[in-house]
Amino acid sequence: MPHITAIIPAYNEELTIGSVVIAASGFVDHVIVVDDGSTDHTTEIAEKAGAEVIKHTHNLGKGAALKTGFQAIKNTEIIVTIDGDGQHNPQEIPLLTKPIEDCEADLVNGSRYLNKKYKGTPTYRRLGQTVLDKTTNITSGLKITDSQSGFRAFAAFTIPAFRFTKTDFSIESEMLMDAAENNFKIKEVQVGTTYNQEQKNGKIHTQNPVSHGLSVFIKLLQDMEFRRPLYYFTIPGLILIIIGLILGLYFFGKYLDHQMTTLLPTVLAGMIGLGGIFITFTGVILHSVSRMIQKIGK
Image 1 (cartoon, one colour):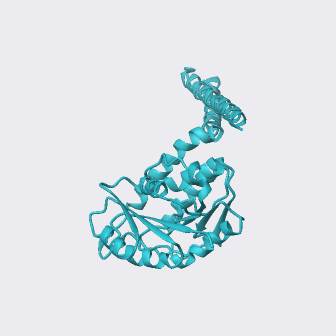
Image 2: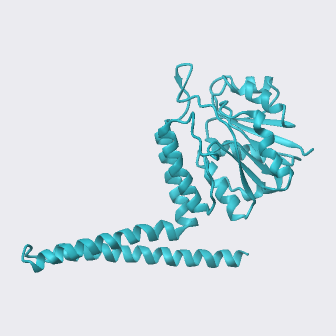
Image 3: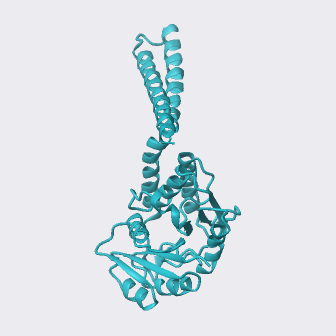
């Protein structure tokens, strides 16, 4: 049997961390909890539950916690990441590790939506996640159904491929992009989830989902600028070209019908179209440069 290590990033999870550690311990050989600057008893409870705890002195973000956990791994063959808030079921860990054990995958993503059933997921969350999934897939070239899942398994040899440049929740998408760039075999398996919603015991437990989603989306767009410039520049450029063309014809028609006495609006519309052409060609050029760099790298 392969040696399996679980990494659990946690921030103020004293209500759930103990049960997550104990349950995960039944399916892995070693549990590492990265306490990301908690102000409650997360560290103490995790240690009593049997986990190795690495504590950040202050809150750095989930990406930073995962980076710390991955850097602490020694002599293991499979790594499992699982959130400390109890939304994942540790009993499903074998579902994630089996494809790696069978050499069918290098990274296994635990998807809450692989079977297209969204029961238990608030509608506003699912809408936001769909946008993030589409953006991640466009940027990475993958077809992932749950890009924001924190429940994953990794073959140990993949560790050096992950850059961990993101310190926040956008780390989930970045890891998928890094895996895709390194041509790792990626597989998804269906997993369940238990939402604690936005409250636990009457207090706000997690970041506001709207601000969280917007933050991740902005980070993904920044990644797209470098990884997929053709999409990032060309699509907006084409939109501007179409807008400029339509407005230009409209205003010029008004001028010919003597409904306008100046060509200034037509000229401005033309400038919008020219700007779109410039942006479009920028995307095409950057895409070509990116492809050349990739070929040289190979």
